[in-house]
Amino acid sequence: MFQLTKRYLTNYLEAQLLITLISLPILVNWGIPISTATFIGNLLFIPFITIFLIISSLLFVTELLNIPNEYIALLLNHITNIFEVFLNLGKKEWLTCFTTNNNFLLVLIPIVTVLIIKQIREKELRIFYLSFFLIITTSYFYFNAPKLNEKNYIPFSKEKLLLENKHEQLSLIDLGHFNTKGSPESYINFDLKPYLIKNFGILSIDNLVLMKPSVRSFKAATELNNTLQIKKVFINMKNPKLSKYAWKCYFELRNNLSKQNTKIIKLDNLL
Image 1 (cartoon, helix red, strand yellow):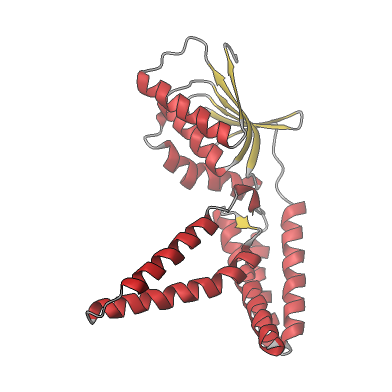
Image 2: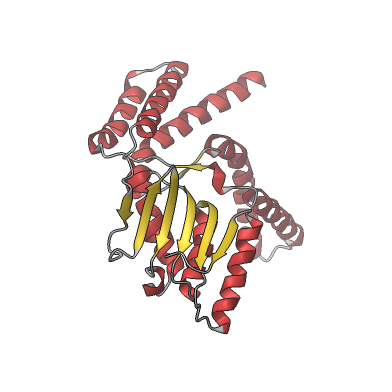
């Protein structure tokens, strides 16, 4: 039993290290964060997903053959509910990201990984070298991340979205850019967030400033708070001309911020 468990763990660790190293250049280049709980999470969920797939297949086959499958469906439903509970335990604080301007290193990582797998026959030694190589590469990404300027305008925002780095405070200032987007949520998830991660390795900001509050800027702030770690949200409330729906979006934003312990500050004038 001990040997079987040891073999399973070593095989899993080797496979996980291999997958992590091969996918790392893709994640870095696309601006996708990595969960620090990946190794433990996959170890726990691989047996769980295996059971889920087996029971799902049984349900499918019994349905095709008109065999009574109420208990199978009930069991699958319970497994799905348990799976959802564990998924909801995930936190954005577990995410980390890496960025680099060294494209040569991104190409080198999978090459070295394959060479380690091909050249080293002893499994324990392969795991050691893969682990060491992963630590070296991620450390390089971390300590050689591109530096932020004092003012960084987000591309294609016509200088209406500013990333400001002053007095050890990182602020994202919206000067009306979110109001030009038909779907602020899509823009944040597919454009802004990958840009921040890929170019600066940013997953958290100290301050989000909404200079021109509106329905779209409130929705954007809600989505940003769901995907990034934000400490404070400042809203310029000087002469706000908000519709009833805009106020509804504002209160939804306030509730969202409250749940995640993010402070909201209304100011009469931020100019």
